[in-house]
Amino acid sequence: MKRCSFFIPVVVIILIFSGSCATFHTIQRDEYEVLCSAVTASSSAVIGEYGENIPPDFNAEKFLQLVENKIPPKYLSELKKYPLEIKPKVSYYLLLVFNPYTKALILFDYSCTPDPDGQIFYEPEKYDTKNLDLYDKCKDQ
Image 1 (tube, rainbow, N blue to C red):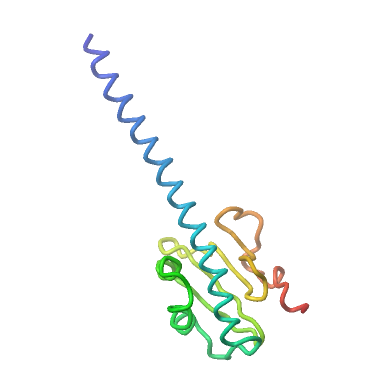
Image 2 (image 1 turned 90 degrees about the vertical axis):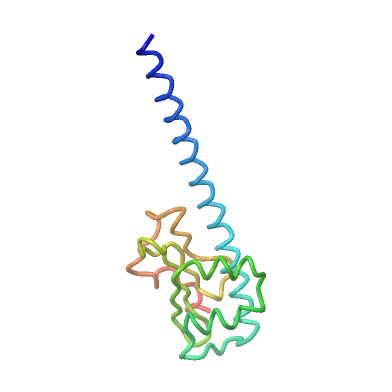
């Protein structure tokens, strides 16, 4: 009987822990979906402001200032959770989004395309993050 009374709480703890891990993973995926939507909306706002004349000094700070009142507050809040880097390319820009904890690249987007170009979070093995130019569809336009 002692053995059974020890076994049941251990099983309950394991089940609770495994359930919380699944929930945490779902929350991350949900947040990533919002982040992808925020990147798409932001791209439209920046292109709406600058067209094909992205300033050479355009950076993450200017990016966030520009989109602040042009995208939903939920999107802005999500963007601010992540380290961002902007690389201006004259008529478009490359947005890099990093994991705030590991500093690994989790998303990239060339602004000339409607959706994020590199959803690394979902398919990390699909992308060569050292050679992002391979995925630049804008340079051919």
